[in-house]
Image: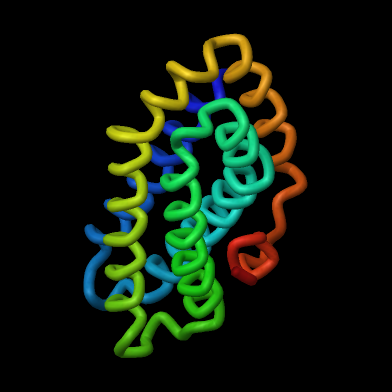
Length: 157
């Protein structure tokens, strides 16, 4: 699978979870907790494979996109810390829904920039074969992704 297609599929998976969360009722604390746990898992894995494999390859293969990569790592930094906070947060906490809402806004902004501005440049610079090879590596690396969002590289930056 092509690396960009894989990342876009991840984006779609997370967006479905966001929509589920938004549709859950006010009193659906258990359901919201379950959804957020899935969001944490998906986004932690996604950030891990981007930072460990995709970003370094893009930095080398599409050097004129380095500014985007640096900005993306900073966006990841914010997201993984929010995921870490949500991980231990009671879904009945008055700030739980607000924190998830801010997380969703951040992730949606990040996804929009990647898909509309950055991915086309990376695709053009790197080509189909390289992206397919990266996609295979990224798919395998998903199994190695940490469960703890703070174990993702950007958490420490």
